[in-house]
Length: 171
Image 1: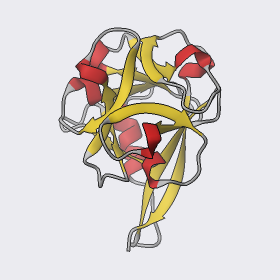
Image 2: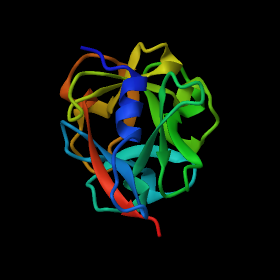
Image 3: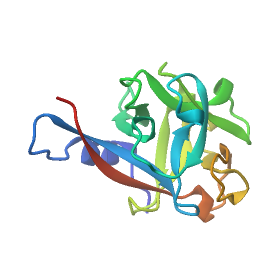
Image 4: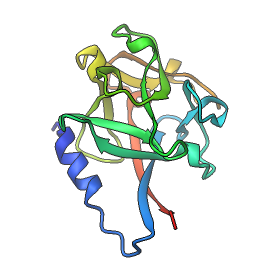
């Protein structure tokens, strides 16, 4: 079963938060390694995305929002006040392209869709590749700092991601 981006965005956007000073973000962790999407060096700049153990740093939290046209999803960094998004290096449509944290620009390389029916095991497909490629951990590595790239969707666990809600007080 394929979940549409608009369905996921609606579900994620309508999370009820009892405390008005809190906002829901997500840590996005690889099912193979258990490690989470993290800008290299925990940077707030334009850098590659790697996997690291989750340690509650704000650079590991992502706001899942609808793209400007409402058809896809964007992952915006909490640490940069939503000014940086996960995209593909150079806007590439090629396989083995590194994921990158860069200024949100509304281009296709920062738009994503999902495949799967379980928020604990979703495949992320890149609109920049016309949904031919998926986001995964290079070489199915379980090492800290391993590269996160797009490559041919193969259904393996290193291309599966778990989304876990994290409440953040913003007062």
